[in-house]
Image (cartoon, rainbow, N blue to C red; front, side):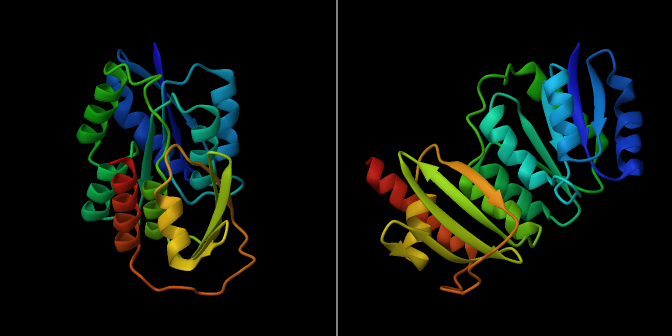
Length: 224
């Protein structure tokens, strides 16, 4: 029996989703965890086939869980749910990465359809991790303040986000906007997240989507 892990710090949400998805118990079993740390214990103890997580949680939030899964279990598909999104943001995130994104309150029939499709597609072992562009959009949606340490090909850089806005970046000799473009253009980058921000200096005020599109454009030009 395939197992789906739902991670949310609100008992009402966990119970609601588990009860609503019970009619699919012949297809998959629903397990629940109340934060990212609890989810990690479940993942270490059970053969989990899909994880669906909220973002704002105590102890270990959804961002940290996404980073952990990207590093330790990139083969397990991830769904994200949040109360702070919109259909437009969902469309943008789905277009940029492998994360499926659901806005609360969720359409249970649509959610079940997506779960079944993911489980039936043989996605396990095929998910290549979370793209930096998608992750930055989640940070923006949730107005999160954090530092992202990005590594690829022996190089390491940092992105600073203040209340969801990308405001500073540094990699090697590059700083500011050029550094942000460079980091977003990297392939197969690993991400570490720190909730503390040491440097709050604002280097640029460009909209996140314009930064992402320029970074991806440079990536395409480099590959060409």
